[in-house]
Length: 136
Image (tube, rainbow, N blue to C red; front, side, top):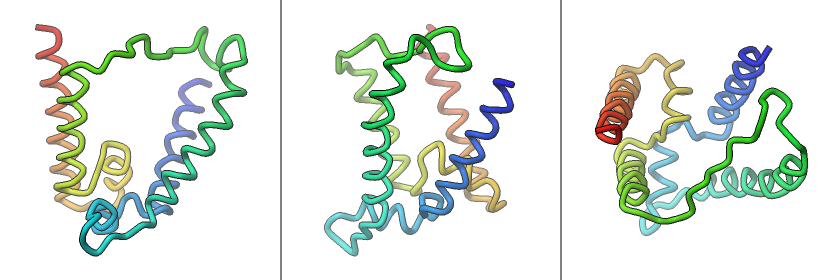
């Protein structure tokens, strides 16, 4: 049941990314181009997500536990350190250069574009290297 709900939520998330334009690299790069031909569409997508999160988290976190897990998995660290900053920088560079972050990139695999496949493979290799370096 948990796997099915995860699949359903992932599919809904992917469709939402496609419908909102987050899988269109030109639109994402236009959104990131603040001093050029700025495309504000994605600000509304993000604003909507933030509003839903602000409301929903108040109700969800009042529960004793999630529906399909024994406990909530919330972050315990609150410090801003070099690892967080370097990860954010790498994420931002990847997002700015190609116009994808992990969720939209995986959703866009359905378009069967070679460049997207290469991006996802490079992203996965980078994640594996980061995990290996972190463990060492």
